[in-house]
Amino acid sequence: MPHKKHKKSPSHAPPRKRGCLLGCCLAWLLGAGLLASLVVLAMLVVPEWNPFTEHPAVSVAQQVVTPGASVAFALQAIFALGLWRWRRWGWYGLLALQVFGIVFGLLSLAPGLLPTGNYPAVLTQFTNASRGALLGLPPFIVLWFLLKPHWKRMH
Image 1 (cartoon, rainbow, N blue to C red):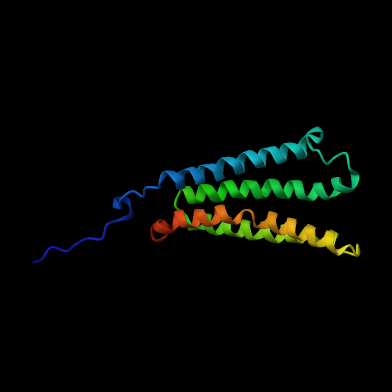
Image 2 (cartoon, rainbow, N blue to C red):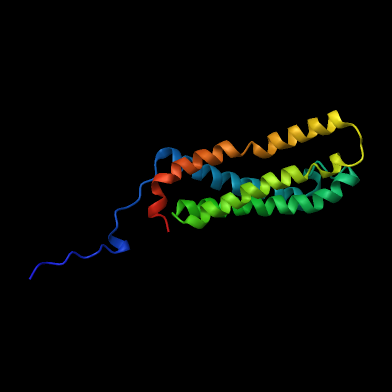
């Protein structure tokens, strides 16, 4: 009787090895997300550390933006940890955060686009916001190319 080949169970699967560059990128995302989340949270808790508290009009907006930024940075760290543990949801979460950042960056233009009538200034503001919103794309694309060889083995 011929010997059957058994499928290897996940516990016997060869270990996945991440390259140095992928490891550094994920460590950077994790560390920067945690650190930025704590700094932004500290700005919320300790008003003296928040540079926006001196301007009342800006401080109202910061009461919404600051907690949101803290949550976004914490989510970045969680999604980076998911990628570190070879989970696809980490990639999808980082993708969602990237799209949210681009949309939020472009929507932040809305007050500047209202009735000023100063179209060169509005165009400059749009260009600056678009550039800022799209600045995070190149590292994100590099991360995708680093993950691509491992994608089929991720859970």
